[in-house]
Length: 144
Image 1 (cartoon, rainbow, N blue to C red):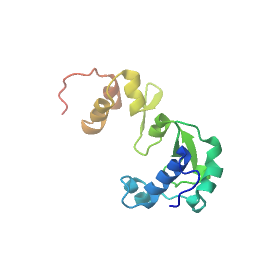
Image 2: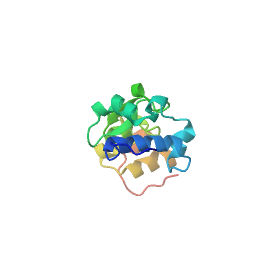
Image 3: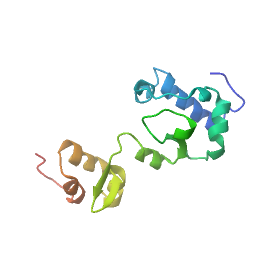
Image 4: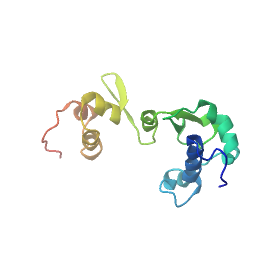
């Protein structure tokens, strides 16, 4: 990729990393992006076009997020979000509803002050119901 006048900006590095995830087979996360068919639109092969589309709304501390994770990177499918919001939008972030409240595993763990790994193990490994996973106190249990 050519070096541009804007190459020292956070926006530029975001653009480079987005393209690498989708285009470079040797990138550590390629299997989750390019390997799953996620691509960057042709217009954004040029940094100036990306900057014109997304630069006005970029703010320090935000990262680029695809609104629909099954689609690629293009203007109408991208936004700038906090890391927390991005974590909630991941493919593997499944919401759970209990007592009329719907949240993902991370938010339930914070609300209930139960380690996220504990909740994950209860639900996905031991097959506990959502009710049991969210309401039983942490302690020694027979898991089978």
